[in-house]
Length: 262
Picture 1 (cartoon, rainbow, N blue to C red):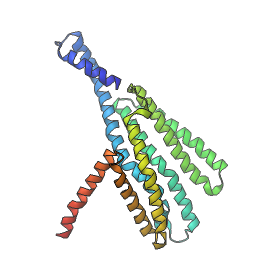
Picture 2: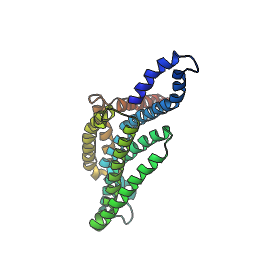
Picture 3: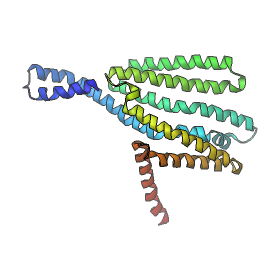
Picture 4: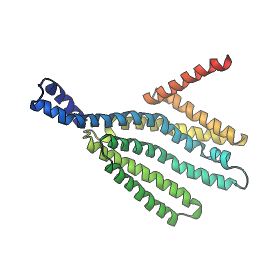
């Protein structure tokens, strides 16, 4: 980032200057601003890595396992198969919004690191306005059976738009030279999407194939296929955060096994 490079260039000059001179005074004035920029960049870097490694696979699981999960939770009493399918469609419409919600939340924390609380408020107003308008359109234009599903999709679309606007505003605030589509984070998200598409599709097929055995078996089979697909594609696609997360999980599982045997 431009501001970080300027800060690094000023530090050697300021350190070589005695106290009370203009370079030392400039260092005193610019240090809080530079530390805030560094803190904001650190917040974004750490949290987006977690989002890529955990939130996106969770959204894929919601897409793939929506129907067996709804059948497992609500498939009792007077709930019909049509009701379960309708609730599964709502859950699937919410799934993309999970990724956008996580991304927008992380980026808004960077503004707080810059001691800016007004910008996140106005950015949230954009999301609220879009959600209200799109939800009203869904309620008025869609059939009654799909109205709630349309409202869920409207919320996901509003979150995606808010995520994009927040990223644009933050990139200007931090003086990011490269466009977002050319950044390392954008390329990492693109590679993660390459793994997410087959993971969600194969997980859905596995859950549908195991549906005759019951909702618990279908949910377990679909979840296992999603996890295995991400695990197999993590290293070939260069998903370092996801590979590290899976490695930590495997280590914890291997530590628990000897204890259970003993």
